Length: 162
Image 1 (cartoon, rainbow, N blue to C red):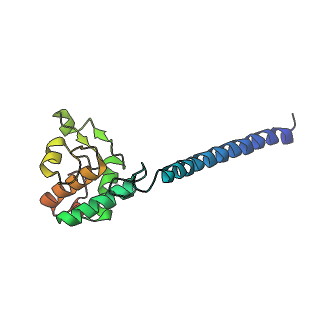
Image 2 (cartoon, rainbow, N blue to C red):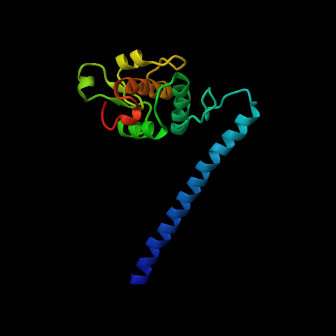
Image 3 (cartoon, rainbow, N blue to C red):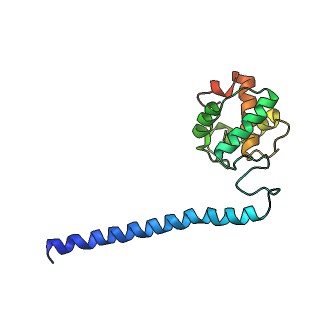
């Protein structure tokens, strides 16, 4: 087989792969639009999976913003950047994160959630008006910020494990 013929086959495969990936991406992008159309037909009084009960986006940005609103109301200091920096370090933004290897886990009380809070700390610093579920993103952020405020003055002053 000539060198030119060998070159064409991989290029054609690359183009086909690109088209398949692009087509898959288009399908993935279309799915939320289909769901959004169906959700909007349900009426404005219902909450969709894309928002929290308080009306914030049901994602990392919305959870932080909802926590900050509660924190302002309860006079708990902290900023978006301080919360974001700490939760990315602690859980990479995964609200279901659990640490099963550190000293807390060895004692049987693993750190859980976005800001890796242990159960006793979560219970002690739980903020009224939030869920009692340690994995609830807003409850986890708000309790952790309440703890950080009591211990360090603010979540903004936390730059490592706490």
